[in-house]
Image 1 (cartoon, rainbow, N blue to C red):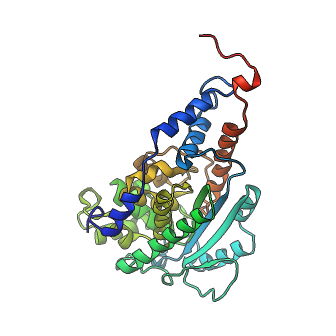
Image 2 (cartoon, helix red, strand yellow; image 1 turned 90 degrees about the vertical axis):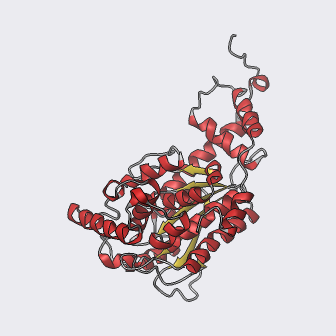
Image 3 (cartoon, rainbow, N blue to C red; image 1 turned 180 degrees about the horizontal axis):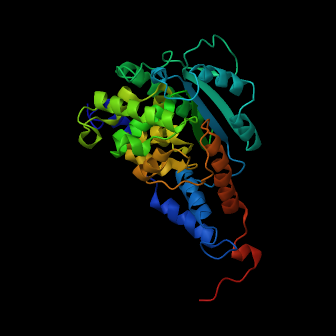
Length: 362
């Protein structure tokens, strides 16, 4: 199945617009009239200009912000690819709901609403309040032996993200972040990265939740077997489409984040992506619909070696580099504060004319 021939993908591509260069020009012209030397705010100026061009209107602060944390389990965790047992996914979701995780602290500090979404945790949350119940199935299958998902499950996972992006638009969100929780999901992200970027598995596979060197070597060996099974000719001869890659070696939270990136771009909503796993979802969305790049902000660069390859694949420069590897949307929410600072400077600084300050000679 070609991603360009799939009717749903064709429709999504048609609904994503590139940024209007006139809006970018207008925003940069305004920035040059502010009481500072032209370009002196560095990358903050480009961040502000892109937000204005995405919104196609003047943006007021505080921005309406939210971070969506998608949780799901992975069958491949049975292959001992993580330093933690799979039960931690369920336990950490409960921690999010009890306001005990890093993302709770950061979201509260930076004024972003936290939305926790169960899209595939291998536990029954029943009617636990404070979260969105969108479970497609109780975790993916073990990609070591079979495709992680069926085509229908991929579609349902994507639809979760598309629906929540539409809801975010309806709620007036100016900036959203995507994060995740799922034991085993760095293995899925490494497989996706190898498939998309054509890099060797060893080059894109890190320690995940904290594997020792022996554990990391085992993880690489498992991934090499997975790639041989699902992409028999090896990454260099890969023929799979982005949706096929997602189905074979992805995760339900990755599918939902991919859908959210696509949906956000359709609704002209800026997205800050977090770490390695959420960036693998953004890279799949980019492979499906390249115009999503205009709406993406890379929150940070993590310790995972594959993260750099994904940024290069999409063509994004991370806002922060703090040596983090937590996930949860934590780095994205920190970067949100930088984006909002850029917008505040754009909106609140005086122009030379208004302040009565002389412009530069010449």
